[in-house]
Amino acid sequence: MSDITCHAKGAHHLYPRARTVIDIGGQDSKVICLDGNGNVTNFVMNDKCAAGTGRFLENMARTLQLSLDEMSELGLRWKKDVTISSMCTVFAESEVVSLVAANTETADIIHGLNQAVANKTASLVRRIHGEAPYIMSGGVAKNRGVVKALEEALNAEIYVPQQAQICGALGAALIAWEEVQYGQSER
Image (cartoon, rainbow, N blue to C red; front, top):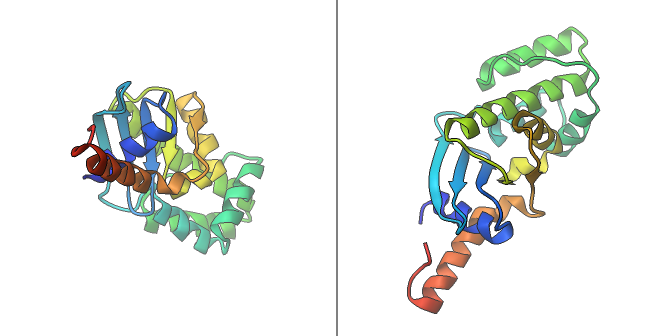
C-alpha cells in the first residue's frame, strides 16, 4: 500500500467527515482529497526538498537554539508580523540568523516561519481543490502555531487527532486487518 492510501484510511477512521487530509511529516508534505467513503480522489506531494516539512522546522529550531516543543509554544506569543521569504532551508536559515542579529523577537520569527509553512501548505490544498472538513496528520500537527496559521490561511478549522503522527501507521494496520478478516481491503 502507498503511504497516500494508508494516510487516507487512517484519517477516515479517525475523522470520517474529513474531505481533505493535510500530512506534514519530517521529509515530505502531502494533501489528500477524500470522498465520503474515505477513498482518495486526488493528492499532491511536496517531496523534492525539505521546504515546509518537519525537517525544515527542526533546522529552524536548531538555528534558534530551541526544542520543537519550545518553538511550538513560543510561536503563539508573537506580536509583530515577520515575513520569511524563502522556504529553502539554507536561505531561510540565513534570514533567521539576520533577524536574530537585528534583535527581532524570537516569537515573531517563529510566527513568520509558521506562516511560511502554512502558506506553502495552503497552496497545495488549493492546487488540488481541497475542501473542509480538514484533518491534519504527521508530526508537524503537534506544532500549534503551524496549525493555527494554516487554519487562518484556509479560513477553516482543522481537526488534529491526539496521535496525529501515527495516522498513516493506523491506516496500514486497518488495511492489513481488513485483508486478514475479509481476504481483501475495502480500498
